Image 1: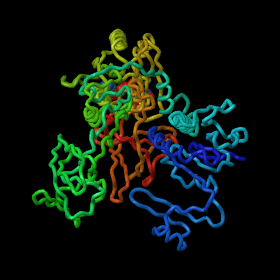
Image 2 (image 1 turned 180 degrees about the horizontal axis):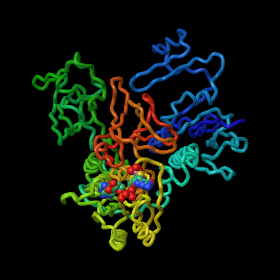
Image 3 (image 1 turned 90 degrees about the horizontal axis):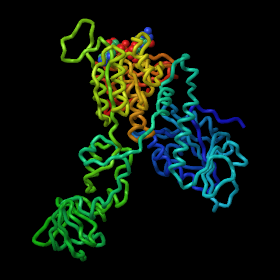
Length: 589
Ligand SMILES: Nc1nc2c(c(=O)[nH]1)N[C@H]1C(S)=C(S)[C@@H](COP(=O)(O)OP(=O)(O)OC[C@H]3O[C@@H](n4cnc5c(N)ncnc54)[C@H](O)[C@@H]3O)O[C@H]1N2
Ligand code: MOO
C-alpha cells in the first residue's frame, strides 16, 4: 500500500479497542500544546455518528437536507458534510485541514493505511501485538516489554511518549522542508544555524537560592511545591450570609454569629441557622453556601433572602480549601521565568527564598572605528553606538546580567585583550559589527587565534552574516553591525542559546498567524523578517501590515512595530488576505 502523503508530519496510534487510545490522546494533547506543537486530530469512527446534538439548529438544518452544514462562532467553526455514497479517504480528510496553522496531524484509527504509527498495547486486553504485521509501527508504548528493537516505553509514561511525539513532529517538519533545495549553496537556513548553535550549548546544572524579590526575572531551578493549601480554609467569596445547602427554601434564618476575615466561627452550623460572614472568612462547619449581602435583609437576628434577585445554588460563593493549589502541588514549574504573578504566588505560599538558575552573564561590546559613544560630539562619517543599548535592554529583559565592555577600537591587541577577559568573566560573549565579508580582517585573525569560530551566512534578512563559536569554552556570537539585523539575529540565534543556558532546553519563541492586510514581498528560499504591526479588524480577525521602511539600519520601524512578520523560505511572498506567521515583540525586546 502506498504511504499516505502529506506536507505535515503524520503520526497514528495503532491499538486494539479498549486500550485507551482516546484517553491517552486527551492527556497528551495539552502537553503537546506546551511544546508549542499545533496538532490536528483525525479520528475514524466505525459507526454512524452525530457531531451536533438532536434539537440543535445545525442538527435540524442538516437533517432537513443540507448536504454541508458549516457553523461558525467567534471561537470555533465546524463543518458537517453528509457522505451518503462513500466515506472520505484519509488524503481527502487531510486536504480539509488548514495546514498553514498546524505542525502535526495525529490519526486515530485508519489502521490498515500506511503511515507512521505508535503501537499502544495493554496486556489485560489479551490481544496480539500489531508490530509484527505492520511495518509502519515506529515505536511501542506498552505495559509489558515487546520483543523488538523498536523504541519502547511504559504506556503510562506520558512525558516520554509526548517527548517522542514532539521530537517526531520537529524532526519530520525539518525533513519535509528540504533546506538544501531551498538555500543557495554555502548558506544556512535559520533552522540549520539555530540547530548547529544549540548542539554546542551545554546547560549548567548549578543552582542558587536568593531572596524572593531578587528572583524577579530569573528562572526557577526546580518545581516549587506548595507547602500549604491555597486558600488555607474553605472561605466565603462574598460579604453575605453562610447557610447549609441542605437547608435551602426557608423563609428566614437565625443569624447566630458575625465572622470577620481573619476570624472564624467554631461551632457546627445547625439547620435554620446562618452566620453573617465577610469575604475571605472561613465558612463554618456544615455551611457550604453563601448568599451575598445585597440579596439579604436582616432584622434583629433574623435574615431573609430576596430570591427574585436569583435563586440560591448549593455551594455558591464559596472557595474551597486548596482549590487554587493543594499541598504538594507544583505552584511554579522549573524553567519558568519569574514575573509578577509568580512572585506573588510564591509569596502567597509563605516562601521568601527561591532556588533559581544562576543568572547568565553576558559580556558584550561593539566594534568599528566609526562607532561613537552617545553624548560625544558627532564626528564626521561616524555613527552613534545603538547596538550596545538595544542588546543591553533585551538581555536585561530576559534575565541576564550584562557586562558592558564598551566600544573596542580597531586593533588586534585591543580585541584580543577584550575577548580574553570576556571569556573569563562571562557565560556568553556578544559582539556587533565586523562579521560580513569586507571587514577589517583583524577580527577574523583574532577570533581564529583565540578560539574556534565559524563565519556563516544565514539565508535570512536582515541578519545574513553571523559568526559563532567558542573563545576557550565560552560561546561567542558575532552579530552583524546593522542595528535591526543585530536585534533580529539576537532573537533567532542568541535567545534560544541563552534560554538553554538558563535551563530551558526546548525554548521556542511564541508566534501566531494573522491575515496580511497588504502584499508582503520576499525572496523564495530566504526567511524574511519584516517589522510589522498586528491588530484586530472590524470582523474580529487578527491582521498584520508592514511597519514601514525595512532597511537593516532603520530602528524607527522597529520601534513602531509590535511584531516581526516571518515569511518562510518556501513562501514566494504573501498576498493580501493570506495568512502569515507573526512573532509578537511584546515581552521579547
Ligand atoms: N559585500 C558585502 N557587503 C555586505 C554584506 C555582504 O554579504 N557582502 N552583508 C551586508 C549585511 S546583510 C550586513 S548586516 C552588514 C553587516 O556587516 P558587519 O557585521 O561587518 O557590520 P559593519 O560593517 O561593521 O556595520 C554595518 C553597519 O552597521 C553600523 N554599525 C556597526 N556597529 C554599530 C553599532 N554598534 N551601533 C550602530 N550601528 C552600528 C555600521 O556603521 C554600518 O553602517 O554588511 C553588509 N555588507
Ligand atoms: O541582513 Mo543585513 O543583516 O541586511 O543588514
